[in-house]
Amino acid sequence: MKLSRTVLMLLVAFACLCARAADYPAPQEGNTIIKDFQFKSGERMAEVKLHYYTLGAPQKDASGKVRNAVLILHGTGGSGRQFLSPNFAGVLFGPGQLLDATKYFIILPDCLGQGQSSKPSDGLHMRFPHYEYDDLIELQYRLVTQGLGVNHLRLVMGTSQGGMHTWLWGEQHPDFMDALMPLASNTVEIAGRNRMLRRMIMDTIRNDPEWNNGEYQKQPRGLSDALHVLLVMGSSPLQMQKLYPTREKADAYLENYVARQMKTTDANDMLYYFDGSRNYNPEPDLERIIAPLTAVNSADDQINPPELKIIDKDIQRVKKGKLIILPITDQTRGHGTHTWPAIWGDYLAELLQRSEKH
Image: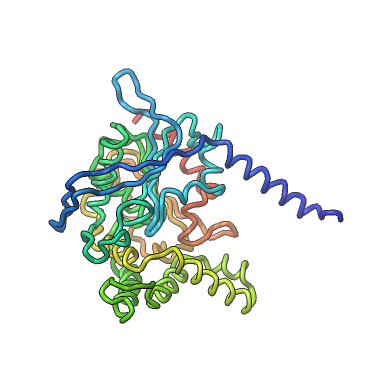
C-alpha cells in the first residue's frame, strides 16, 4: 500500500522528533531530605522529601561559582518529569539546542505537595502542613543549594505555577540568577476570576460528603467536577474545535480525560496545591528583581487573559524586564502554550544572549 506524500512527511517528522528527544543525556533522578522544616503557618515537618530530575553536570568557574545551572519549575499539580517530553525536552535539551544538556545542568524539581515529593496523599491527608508559595520557594532554594550544591543559577524558568514561582525567585534571591523567564503567569495576587476558579475547584471537593474531611477510601465524585473546571479554563477554544469538531468526538474526549485524570489525581493533594497560591503577590516588590527577565503570556490564555492589562503596567517596574504577549495562532494552546518552546523559543534565545554579561 502506498503512503500519501502528507502521511509520509508526517511519519518522517515524527521519527525525527523522537530521535531528537533521545539525543539529550539520560535524566537522573533523586531525593533530597530537608530536616525539621518550619512552614510560614508555624507547622513543622520532621522530614520533607523533595524529588527531582537532573540532566547534565554542573560546571564551576575559577572562583567556584556554578555557571551553567538551569532551574525549570512546573505548573500546578505537575511534576518535573512533564518537561521530559518530545515537545519540550526534544526542542530544548538536545545537542546544539538552546538548553543543550551537554552544556547546561538542568534541574527539574517536583514541588512540595506534587509529583514524588512529600504530599498529603502520602498518609497525613488534611494533617499535612498548609504550605504557601513562599514555603515552596524556600524548599526549592534548599534543594538547589544544600541538596545539589549549586550556588548560582544561569536561568530560572517556570510554567504557570512555576512562572509565579519565577517572579518570587527574582525577588527573594535577586543575586542568585542571571536570567528569569516566567511563562503563563501574572504579577498580582490571585483575585477576580482566577481566584473564583480556584475556589470553585476547592469547594467542589470539600462540599462533597464523600470527601469525608480528607479521609475518603476512594476519590470523591467532587474531584471530577474540579477536573471539569480545570479543563475549561486551561484549554484553547481554537485547538478544541480543531481536534474535536463533532459532538461525538467532544464527548469522547471529555469522558476519557476525566477517567484518565481520576486515576492519577488525588483530591487532598489538589486542595493543597490550589490553596497554596492564596498569599501569592509579587507586585509590591517587583523593583527587587535585578536579573534580566522576559515574561511570556499568550493571548488565548483564559487564566491570565491579556485584557487585564496588569502585567503590561507592572513590567515597567522591572529594571530589565520585557513582556511578550503571543498572538492567537494555529499553534498556540491557551494556557498550555507554556510547554511548547517551539512557539516561544526565540524569546528564550534573546534572553540568554541579553543576560550573558549580567
